[in-house]
Image (cartoon, rainbow over all chains, first blue to last red; front, side, top):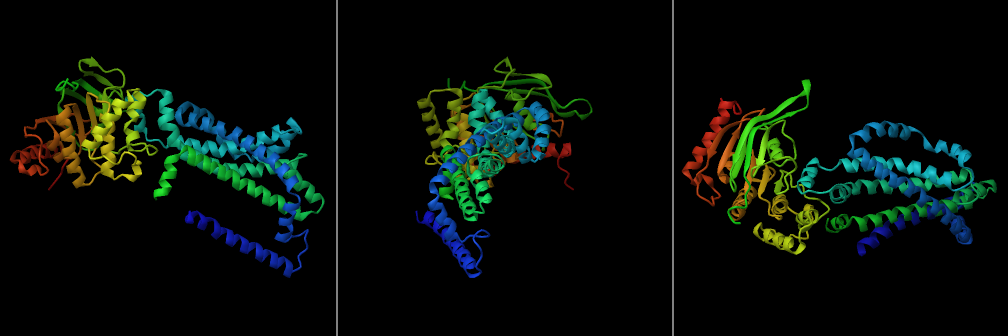
Length: 255
Length: 262
């Protein structure tokens, strides 16, 4: 427990120190609030506006989760197919590489034209962007299995499902989860950017309104809320990993 | 069933060619195999001579390009089920602890859990693994991991044990001990063992017969019956005959050009 406490309080102390420095510098140089607000100002703003931030944050969070799931699950499935079947690799991989090279965020205006003012284009774009990193990590994960494990599973008479469940999926799980952890944070950014482009709610929309009103403290307040969402989602994946892959957790305890 | 638990292996003209046309690589054969039930036979030969391929062919995990393999008189057409395989690397699943790695056989083959667990416990005891049941592979030494892998290959009581350089990655001291432990297990159950090795000492030390293979494409160039009493000691030099057997293998390798000492 003391280890955990140390893990938390050292970075927290360091972080608080930076905020104090920021506060002092803003005060010393008389920086105007709409250029760079002092931490005290936007932290107070979070407290004052907590209801709005909470409601809009929840809307954004929902989109992040939907978009992430809609991108990550097909990423794992396609990763399995590409890693397992030479034909899928030949047919799909060139296409995948091409689409991966495409700066997908530029599709945002197009998707908005096609699908309009709903959640759908936001979820679609988020899923498109989360799909590829997860796919790449899944392919690497499924390919990492020693081919002699297939010999073993076949000599044991394992069915396709048994081979997948007992050998392949657990072997790939570590790579898949490292893909998830990176991707969930990207998803946060994507949703906010898309909301910013065209929306009437969500954290991105709050930023847009704050810019119009020269309300820089509110932008910073959203920034804090958005990064908190990112950290929490990332932590959620870490917790999920430690539940689903308990051998990793026990590994760390004894290391 | 004791004494009759081993399978016989018969092979005629076994040949393996990888690839086609100009890229074709003649890896093995033709070789004949004649292994009696319960016999401990080693295949020894230089790297790339097709020893491992032979083992995979006998397991039915690769198809021969030509020739027939019969197990207990039945031609092999699909992966052999009544078999345990040990590779040079332990190939334990890193996400399962030792006992669950062994019980993988029970899970996949859908065998009775209680009976299998009792067998696994017994094997753990005989292999000096008691107390390691709940440890993950990374928490075990190299020798321990290979012992777990042997337990996994035996827990379903197969009629045949196929081992591909199983002690190749171990240090000399562990190797001597695990060789003895394997011999004791084999003496009890008399499964047919096909043991692939680079080590002359290991081959002569463990086997009833040593088959010596030539460079690629591998053929069997010598078939040596090892008449040494069992169980054999740690220091095989205690047997005057050991040196003669070993000398015969060295001699064959020199004749084949595997060794070029000046």
